[in-house]
Amino acid sequence: MIPLSWARRIAERLRGLPPRPGGSRGAGWDWERAAEKALESEGYRILSRNFRTRMGEIDFVAEDRGTLCFVEVKGRSGEGFGSPAAAVTAEKQRRIFRAAEAYLAGRNAPAPVCRFDVVAILERPGEKPALEILRDAFQGPPTPRRRRG
Image 1 (spheres, helix red, strand yellow):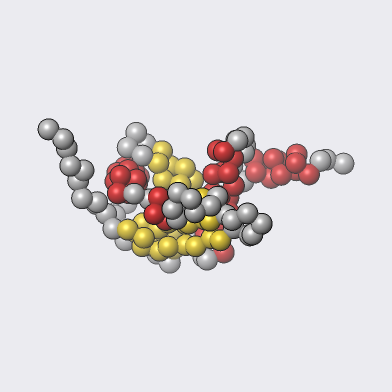
Image 2 (image 1 turned 90 degrees about the horizontal axis):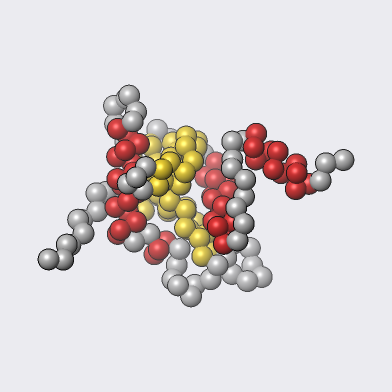
């Protein structure tokens, strides 16, 4: 009989998922898998995972009722550093927006209606993680960063 851990790895590979990293990066991987399940249960259709460009990275590109959604997943294992949604700073929003522009430029289709969503996951010791999908969490493009000089 195949060990359960092997069966999970095989299932993840068949779904096109990379292997789970170790350490604290593994927590982020777990949060992204939890977010993916929640998004799919809410009717989102995942189009791309971890879309990367030199401008930034988008955790999920998904379609929700005809709207193209760029989804950022943020998790925290406590509130000592603030809420997960507050961690999507203006600089992070700029990076996501630039990556979204690159994603749209790579498509051979007219620009669809788009929005930026955030999945906030908060883990507290001894409790089930709280997961919240924040639709239209921010608008783009963010205001330009002030340059020193």
